[in-house]
Length: 202
Image 1: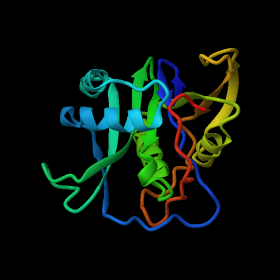
Image 2 (image 1 turned 135 degrees about the vertical axis):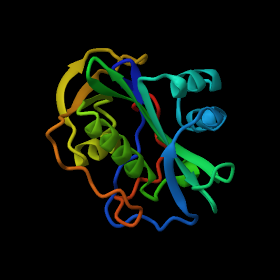
Image 3 (image 1 turned 45 degrees about the horizontal axis):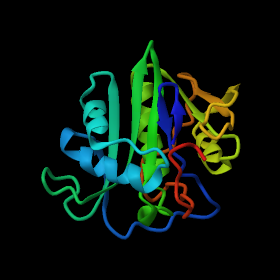
Image 4 (image 1 turned 90 degrees about the vertical axis):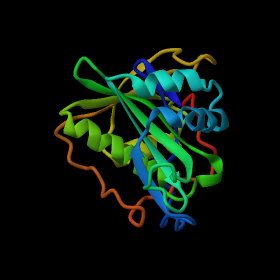
């Protein structure tokens, strides 16, 4: 994931063609405290600097945060029968803007458009709050940049030497007036690439 203002943002991007049909039912729902361990597992599988379970517990409980999880498996919409958490996306609402704190999908669940579904969900949450969205991403991460462009993010600046390895970060914004939010359906999702999403924006 990249830093998104104070947070980070992962990379799951569209590829040519249709998404691979999900092998199990997929449900998006708000994250809750009991998801913290699963969120940490997703982060560990996709990040060079993963957050801990304790960090996710704090994030999910924060009143100015919105986290959405993708659950795969039968009964995913039922409490205590959620199936496996295979990805998440999160926002921090700060000074009237929505900062993308994270976007990640387990490597085993990539290629099915879940990353785009999660990004669409937080875009809708930001729009409902009348908040512009912002994040940072590596210039070299064209996979993520294509995904963000597809839902209306535009490049608005650069942070020199933002990442630990010295690479710059591109600053992206999605404005409140942008109406290019795709339909929130698995069948219409643009497919993600099978490459492992990186949680430092790389």
